Length: 147
Image (cartoon, rainbow, N blue to C red; front, side):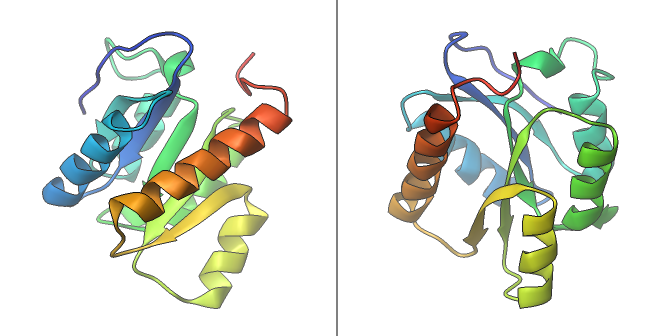
């Protein structure tokens, strides 16, 4: 589990991705977009939930506003993480990132309030457009969902 610090006004993103190369790429993409910063990186579902529930020493879970969630993790499916996030009433938004094109999974993810769905592989312009759409959505709702 790793983290960085950034201005309070930017959206803190928890990257949940078990593939090291993909996690680094996602973090670099996030750092290239104004208004976003990497709040932490988790390699599996267990680390993700620990980060989101304040169980990681030195990581302020209140600084996580958005979870960039891989659906295929070594210790569970992303849908299980979505279920746990909603079940524990963790106030974050979720963008699912996956190679899965299964419509049933997409529909179930949306039922858990997943804000966006990105299909791997993707380019930086696609990633940026999804985060910009998320920013617009968030601004229309009145800003920070964590107040």
